[in-house]
Length: 168
Image (cartoon, rainbow, N blue to C red; front, side):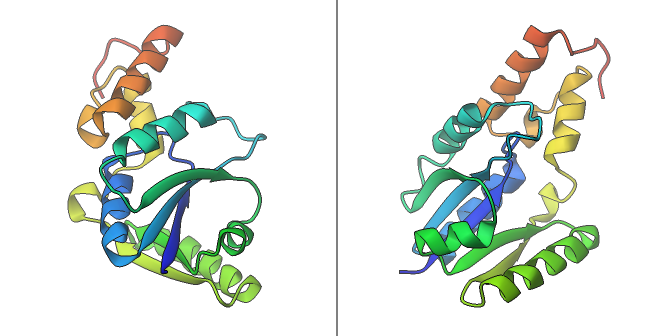
């Protein structure tokens, strides 16, 4: 069985993430979407909510499961028997970091390959950080997110009073 892990913080999950997950699910028998959990880092959405959102938006993909992990990604891959790490590349700026990380992973776990998918051009500028900034400032980030993720951000920023009246 060809199992791959697509890891990230998914804070929130974007349409770009979902595109990589869908395309990865056609290349591998199983794709585990793994939410990296670092209790020392602050996130907009709590871990359990990010997991629930990912499960909801990937529910139509029968070979996709959602999990969380702490520590090194390659160790997680080894624990669950995954032979590939799936990564999306948006731009040249992503490449240097991803290349360096991929080489380190290769050194630590030679049996785990890193597979890069090019981002669909319509999602190339989307990042979770940009989405949160738009939403925090009262802008409409809904076109960049699956509906459940947009609803969660709206609820978060409206209930916290972080949203301003201007559009991004």
